Structures are given as structure tokens and as C-alpha cells.
Amino acid sequence: MDRLLRAMGAQVTHCALGREALGIAASRSLSCVLAPARMADMSATTLIDSLQHTAPGLKVIVIVDNPAISEAVEAMQFGAHAVVDSRRLSTGLYAHLAPLLRGQ
Image: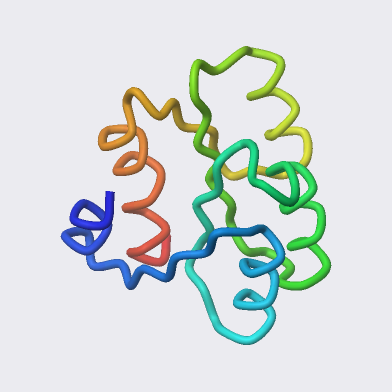
């Protein structure tokens, strides 16, 4: 995934935990956050909710494994910019991330 993101012109910062992402979002200007649906310390919906206070307007793309409609709907209801199936990661990310990196 790093190779794809860098080829699109993105700068990539890795986080193992949601709270790390919150700290980075509070201290840096980010184009977007890519988050798995479930992290060790929080769900993507919790991360999205927290980011709305920490970095209002920051776009979050949620990556799901074997997506259930309910999981995708919940993420979108919490404010996810998009939900991408991990099995179609390259095409899904490109479709949603390219416009964000171009500032559209």
C-alpha cells in the first residue's frame, strides 16, 4: 500500500493505534487518514468521532475486511469519507484518495 500511496504523491505516516493517529492529527496538517475498521485500541467509528473534535474536516477512509453492509453504513454515518474493501484496495483508494490529494 505504501508504494501505491507514494506513487499518488502522498506522504505516509504509520500508526499502530488510534490514539497515535489522534496525536498526529492534532499536531500536523493531514490530507486524510486511512484507518482499518478495527484497531487494537478503538474502532474506526470512535476514531472518526474523536477526529471530528481534534481535526474538524479531516477526511477518513475506512478500510474493511470482508465488509458487511452494516459496518460500511455505520462508518459513513459517523462521518467516514469512504469505505474501501481491503480486497479491492488499490482501485478503491485511488478512486477516493486521488481527488483529496489534488485538493478537490
